[in-house]
Image 1: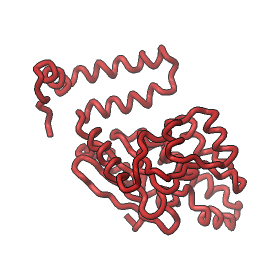
Image 2 (image 1 turned 45 degrees about the horizontal axis):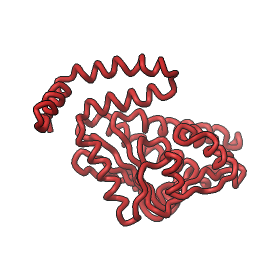
Image 3 (image 1 turned 90 degrees about the horizontal axis):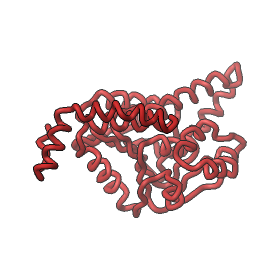
Length: 262
């Protein structure tokens, strides 16, 4: 995909590898477009039950392409229209991750900074290698990470997020796990296998149930308690009405594996 993104299908798991190591897999306009197009394809692919996003080279993702952004300064309006388009496209990408029917797992190594950290926060789960560093460090160059802040504040406690945003300091993988930014931390040589194992576990579940559940999970997060229960109840009923769910419950009661379609 224009040399920026490689898709590898492993059974029911689609593994997307950002292949721009020269700029640490920066989220250039082209990289954002490649990711969006591939996610759109995956959304309609019933054979895919989970997605892993990884980066090639020394880093997962270093955020926006600053050279590309700086070049837009020569535009007649000083770059404002280009910046707005870039941030709008990036926001659409970050919203596409939780909106994707399939769960998305970030496989993170090296660094995940600014919009790269935003992408980790926007994914449903994340597995990181020991030694990985996370930061929303734009403030260090005079650019507050306002758009990465949106995903970050929905993934970690607000005071921790604000500290990261205003100090520009990095946190390590263990601290990221403590804050809830990542789920698991593993040795670097086990990272790919650990991310794939998690994806395969998710992919082994009833796809219709996971799709219903993921949509409901993200829908209820911003609701008041009573509204969240009111929204979740009908989804649970929809799930119960599925023939494959009936089979799953019967199989559990009969102490046998469910006879679900492959």
